[in-house]
Length: 323
Image (cartoon, rainbow, N blue to C red; front, side, top):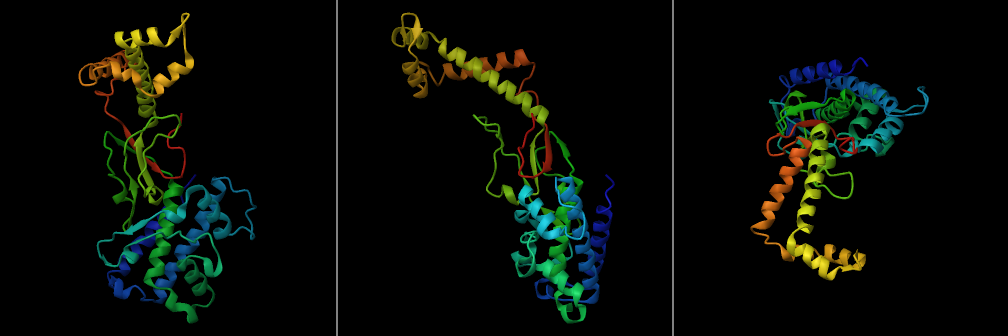
């Protein structure tokens, strides 16, 4: 699909940067308003209306594309349900913006954007007021509302572009600083994998929902690593239960008429009593190493030599890895 939105967004950015050369953007000036800011705000929110409708249909919206389809309570509401956009954070980062207040530097521009009337986002209310009665409501066309509207448009553009950034062997964010002249976003770092009973193994920080992007292993590397880890664990269990002392204990205490006593054996494993018979300082590390070596030989994959491959994807509240 041709992207008609990103060039317009970048043009708006350029004009706001130019405006900041004539108007000092700081906490004391956050309520400064003008006809030029009103024009920029209206153009910004018109873009939000259009891009939100395209995103709505791309992501499964079923209402008819007519006058009864609303960009906020229909389109943005669907996207909120899918992606929790109300929690996504932008950080004002333009070099010639001089805000000190955290409220003016870091905000969630799409919070309440799926509401209408007095419950809606401040930039939405400002847009509606200026659009319908500019002379009376011109003061609402101020720097604060313009930047919040632009923050919302920035996030929506990123989700429309839906880019994946190949980071190769680098697990750090080396891309987000180039996305905007006005804003940075939060990127969730790669914190490791935790293999368990479920499919979701990606480790998350508390601010995960605030992040627009997340860094992860590539699906190919992750699947190879999981296969290797599963096989290593299988080989390790074989070594543990074939250990002479463990095997002897099982034979003498957990077998009857040549059959395993299932209840007793399950209790034995759950209480990890097999490790009572193994020298954990000397034998166990060698067993782990041997299991890893055997898994690597079988799968032709050596985790110690195959460096992880990383990528950054949009945070859509999705299952992180596809199989």
